[in-house]
Image (spheres, rainbow, N blue to C red):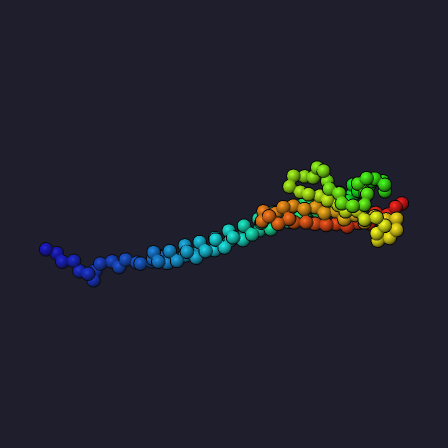
Length: 134
């Protein structure tokens, strides 16, 4: 019977990662991915909010331009509050006309464009312009 000597056996090289090291690396990677995902959600919400703000400003500017193009005595320029009968879906466009303000023979136009946010709060933008009687 032959005896096998332990001294002559080849040594096995133990290079690589242990299971604990791999699990720790995966956990750190997962935390990083979750942080990036939450930043992406925040960026998407901010982008949507900016889009709605731009839309409200554009609608108010368009209404002011249309009011400025009307003759001075037009019914839409009568003193008081007015509302757009056909605003884009989800928006409310109103305007207020004040005669002889800030000076005689002029009208102050305050146009408001609002949108109901997901949280139920109305987001309103108001632009003011003075139309002289020329």
